[in-house]
Image 1 (cartoon, one colour):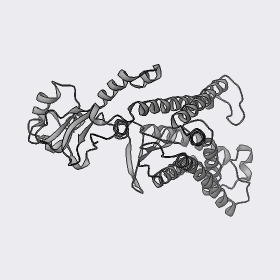
Image 2 (cartoon, rainbow, N blue to C red):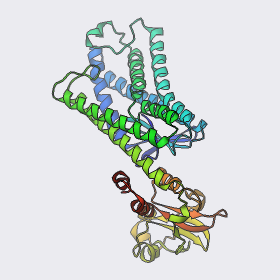
Image 3 (cartoon, rainbow, N blue to C red):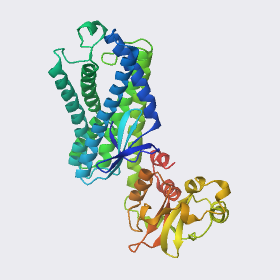
Image 4 (spheres, helix red, strand yellow):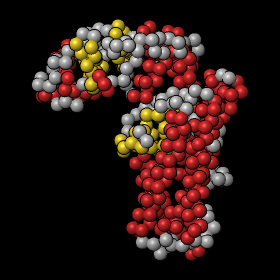
Length: 406
């Protein structure tokens, strides 16, 4: 549940809030099912008089409200990031909660701090609000009940929801304050290190090391729980242990990837796109059929995206994915202009843009090539991910830098 940059993978779009695309990854469906199943069992233990349908229905609503709370957490990140001039393309709900696709690093330690801290604040505030609402309708002490307290717990599904959502949101807020990069607490730590050292690279390195250490600590504790250890707060049991170990592995990997991404940025910083781009080659005419595109352009070469236009005027871009959407029998009747992405929707870079910015755009929009346009929007070349990787491989000096180029 942390702000992140350029997370790959496609999701199912749900709509837009405040201009930010909201989507879910397919892994989210698994966690919704798992949470609903687990909560239904808990609610039936708390309320033996409930029908099975009531328990399952309440559990499903609880799962949906929990992820709505996660969405509020991520929207808080995104709104503050945009206040500091950092674009946010989308928010994705996935296996571990939610993630904001923030397109580049915050411009200052202050921006990093406030963008990170506002998420846990939002979660804790939501938790307090839910508990306050519960206090208006019941005198039951706030907190997650257990089976022994079932007789004292009001049997209303609404009250049960409030008494569960309150503590769980507070727990989410507190968990995200753990200084394990890239959790929000880890980003707060990096903002402090950045402010102290005035060196984002060094701050990222230290925060990444702390994040990896915390991640592997979670893995160790999870394995210990699987083998019967009781760890306060994390509980016991095989499922709890495996889940904690899985979270630890995810945190450790994410922390390492953030450091690797910083190395990429450093290698490409100050390198103009014009140095890495391929000068404009053949441009596919709009009237070309898809069959001719495949035979004359796609099969003979290794490009996966092609500029479409007349001369220097870019009309659009056509990709392998565009062609795959057309039935094979229709290739001879379909023109490139019918399947391409129009020029006004194409993500492009300029010749003197920073190559690091081009790489960020590729990662954010999940593409491997970008057209390069001059100030008059004329096509001058193509920037390819494989050419960026080749440059990184040739100019890397350390094993870690060579690793991230693949």
